[in-house]
Amino acid sequence: MERRYRVRRAANYVNLATPFGLLISVVGGATRRPGPDGLILACGYRYRFPVAGAFTVGNVVLTRRDSLDERLILHEGRHATQWAWCVGLPMLPLYLLAMLTSVVVCGHQATYNVFERLADLEDGGYPRVPPRWRRRHGEAGG
Image (tube, rainbow, N blue to C red):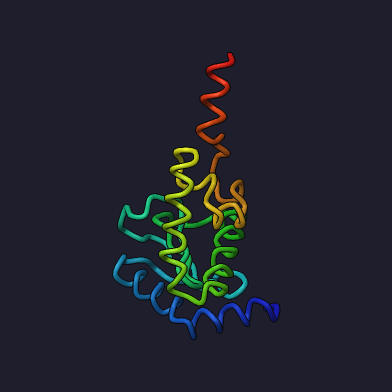
């Protein structure tokens, strides 16, 4: 494993994000297994919240699915790095604020969410929705 992934894994344990993600995986009934680059894949998560194909807490990638494709794992790995940069749990309110901003700008929780954009929208399976003011302008002019 590359040094940067070892550092990310250590940072997310120290900042308590990965232990929190492991706790969520246990409560959610997910089966955990080692993933690439120090990630822990927790498949079979039983709750419908949050609404996403997968979500990451620390180095733990949680999903209701039985497996994840390579692009989605890359996307979620970028979120694991974001957890490390945000020093763990402060990521939660920052992410929620970014999600709210995206909903206000375009009506979709991911398109203008800075965390999702930095993790690559396409790898996460998210659409690129135009901002509300561009849609209005296009409708008025068209």
